[in-house]
Image (tube, rainbow, N blue to C red; front, side):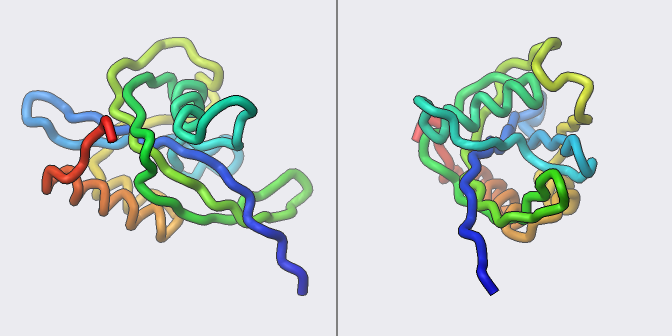
Length: 151
């Protein structure tokens, strides 16, 4: 059986420290097609670095702006369903993005639900095991002070 090679996507793990206790929260969105919980992600864009694609997808899909980390947190894989029912494997490189601003008007407003949740809640909502682990690992890095948004 022939297997198609993985396609590459880039994603943003959008986070904030909620005041007054600096509680760590991440932003989840529903996908437009299945309604499952996901993070903003998209295909490569000509002339943009991978972290810039992640930043742009976060703005278009969730209306958030902030400081994106150039160095990836990691990656996860999933099967992308295409029109017609074909499923292709996708490898998603994830970049952390500290959200500093949320806008009211953005490209996909009204097409998805979004919700700020704890890392524990986010890990229970997403389907992909590697993404669950990535979210939990991100929380541990933040708790241990090993994470720098500027890296």
